[in-house]
Amino acid sequence: MIKFLDIQKITGSFEPQLSETIGRVVNRGWYLLGEEVTAFEREYAAYIGVRHCIGVANGLDALRLIFRGWIEMGVVSEGDEVIVPANTYIASILAITDNRLKPVLVEPDMTTYNLDLSLVEQHITPRTKAIMVVHLYGRACWSEELEQMAKKYKLRIIEDNAQAAGAGWSCTLTESAPPGLAGKRTGSLGDAAGNSFYPGKNLGALGDAGAVTTNDDELATIVRALANYGSSRKYVFDYQGLNSRLDEIQAAALRVKLHRLDEDNCRRRRIARYYHENISNPSIMLPEASEADGIEKNHGHVYHLFVIRHAERDRLQRYLTENGIQTLIHYPIPPHKQLAYREWNGLVFPLTEQIHREVLSLPISQVMEDEEAAIVTEAINKFR
Image 1 (cartoon, helix red, strand yellow):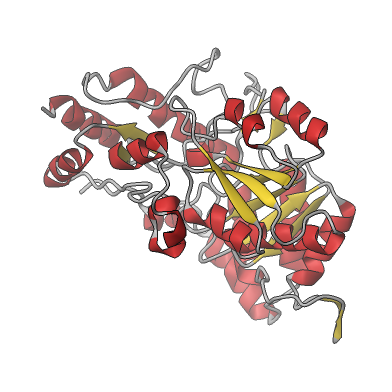
Image 2 (spheres, rainbow, N blue to C red):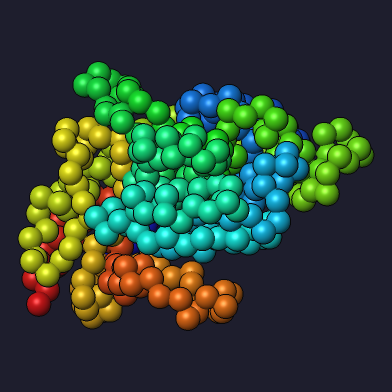
């Protein structure tokens, strides 16, 4: 069986350093708000290119806390609108509604599956206070026009960077080693970003973990307090906060993995290039790959997922399973059709619904072998 994602093999590829590092943390006997978290926050902020990184418990909390911080700052208030992609994982929307803000769903661009930025302006109203972009599947979603629009209407931009650690905008890899980056990374493009380090992500912890990244000094201070029960000093509580802290073991593991993230993302792009160049079944719709400098040299997509489409997706998935190839569906039901948002169930977003009917995610990872990619490709090309 070719696994969709061999997390055990990925973890093993960092040994023995990973176990040695965790052992050091355990033996130190300090498990929360210690030097590993401080060091990871500093290193990840430098990697992303921002002044502040605040480690939190998970990616959803990172997004929730940004909105909570903006509420405390008076930037947004209950009932304000946030433009968000209709085609996204539900966490993007949960972060908005959890803060009693109103999501305004906008259809995707069918070539990238990301938010169609050309549709955003027509959804802006006097109650619109923010735009959430989701770098879905690992592809950067950004434009200069988006930046200008946000300035014109005085809107904040929040990035859901859960799937795109290491991706960039207007940047390409240089020929030198180690790879350098010309441009800005996702997580530094907007006013603030929520980052997820769920184990299956390109930069994955050994459990749930996340971070807020921002250049906003005031927001960073407030988010750090909110994530620690609303406290900036022990037993002194300035806000009605919550308990959402990155622990020392997860931070230590992430520090080990961060040093190899660009290299791992390069490997993912090599697998993606192979799929693009060799999957020739005319019934399969491949993700767009229009990078002028080629997939491997472009940071605009880190291929957290390699997502294809087929009109008979379920039959294709059964066929691949029968041929020993594990695939997943990201995602089978769009947020507006979930019972959690039953008041939206009557809404119609044709493009989003088509995507959710047809998408299938193929195996891809930094530890996937060339031979495995060849087997997947051969099986897909034989599908009728």
